[in-house]
Length: 79
Image (cartoon, rainbow, N blue to C red; front, side, top):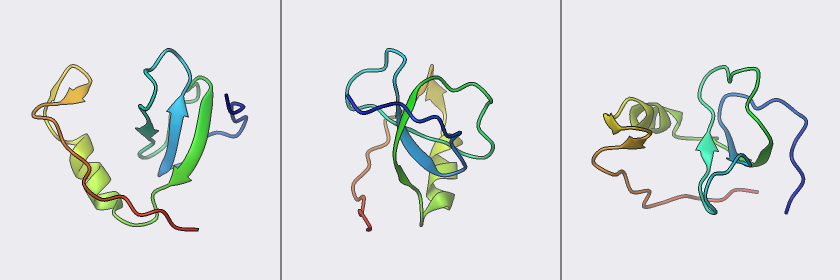
């Protein structure tokens, strides 16, 4: 497994949080993250479309998940 990061996440950081989440789940940090976020493995950053991330955050939920589900149809990796 990749090592956890010692650096605090910033707005737009995309990471896997290693605290029992299922394989393949990730988080996108929006705004100022809490001081304690657990062990994270950052693997990206939102560089375009932060407004869409905020709309997803504002969607109604059933617990922690958006209801109805929101599908990501396009993600572009940049170097």
